[in-house]
Each structure stands twice: as C-alpha cells, then as structure tokens.
Image (cartoon, rainbow, N blue to C red; front, top):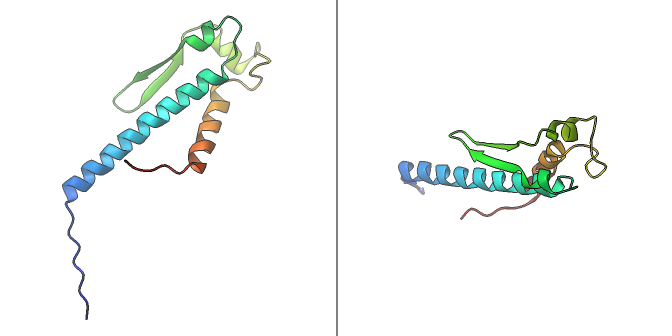
Length: 106
C-alpha cells in the first residue's frame, strides 16, 4: 500500500491565486485599451488620444470624453475606418486573442 500525503500552505495558495488574478486583470485592461486605441478612426487624432482608463476597486473604466464618440460607436455618423464601431469589435478581438493565446503564470 502506498500512502500519499499532500501538504499545502492554503494561505500562500490563496495569495498566489489573488496575485495571478490581479495580474491577469491588469493585462486584460492594458490589452483592451491598446486595442480600442488601435481600432479608433483618425481624422485629427483627437478621438484616439482621448481614450482613458481609470482603475476602480472592482475593475476599470475605459472611456472617451469626446462628444462625438457615441456617434462613432453607435451611428449615425460611423467612420468608414470603423464601420462596426470601436469598442464592440475591440472586445471581440481581445476575447478571441486571449482564448487562443497560451499565457504563462509568472
């Protein structure tokens, strides 16, 4: 008969999981913001430069204060450079990329 005893430091395991979760959240926020900026249509560049990320206790808020942002996103007034809007396609792109990309835990 073989007995295997597994001992683990539960507190350390919980801290490690929390650290990895926070790291993943930060990377997701950075990836989404960069994708939104890259997909933003450019006439003068003001809209693209106006994207902003503010961290909160539970996540982050990515916003753009330009008053014409809703028209570019939802129409009418969408740009030929972003005929489907900016945010929705960016979210879809990031989800697909992150589902197919193997990440290593540091």
